[in-house]
Length: 337
Image (cartoon, rainbow, N blue to C red):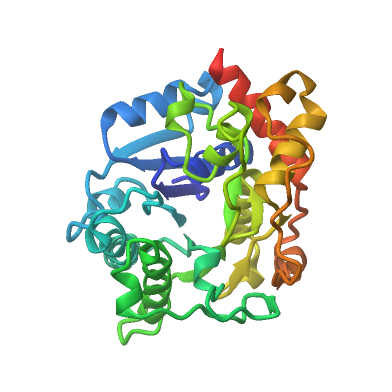
């Protein structure tokens, strides 16, 4: 048995793909869950043979189904689980089935499966969201891990607010699970990033398949905002996907992370500032970008944020917006060729 084997759910996702890169670079063995064999083969084929030998996949077609992860957690003697499988998009037609059920049942489902069928697992790391911290209708002056977002069922059924509510319900369900009468043998760590930008996953073959957050950068450099910038808000904070990935792996390794949640934030951004970074680094794209005189819509009273806990406990050193956007655009240019 290899003691460094990780089960990574949602393996084809943007953040998961970078977690996978980080785990393999650190010599972990990884089994990724995917929704189809085709996706699993595509992910494996994107890696060189020396890394591919430590990467396998298992198909989990529907994370909402009862016992969806039972077979996955039993396929290897895992030491760790990282759960990232959860939808994030703007094409909401049914809040319950698009967001609430996959988030909550997917989260409690993986925890139940690990408790029942994976007795060697020592820690589960849950990818949550800043949506479970930020209260958009009643902002704190400064946000950190001690703040918990509030929601209502009325908000949950609003397509515009359903994603936020789903993350709040899922994180709450995870912590309640850990306090249940039948306590699991593993501990839990929760990570809460805001909008996540950065280089495209290595298995991606087209810009059309980019994750929702990165589409803001893609559309800026493709010239979609040349005649006018869309509003940035309500979220004005970001994190580089590579820092989010690093935080997940550190969360596996640092004993003091046990039972904690971490606000994973790299800094402020606006769509205007993204355009300015692209203009400074890629002058050949200037004709596609909004004018330099376009207004920056960062609020003068924007809420503050405190990521000191993630720096001190996990040792994360965050990339700035320029580095994040430059590297993202470079990867998009390669995909566009």
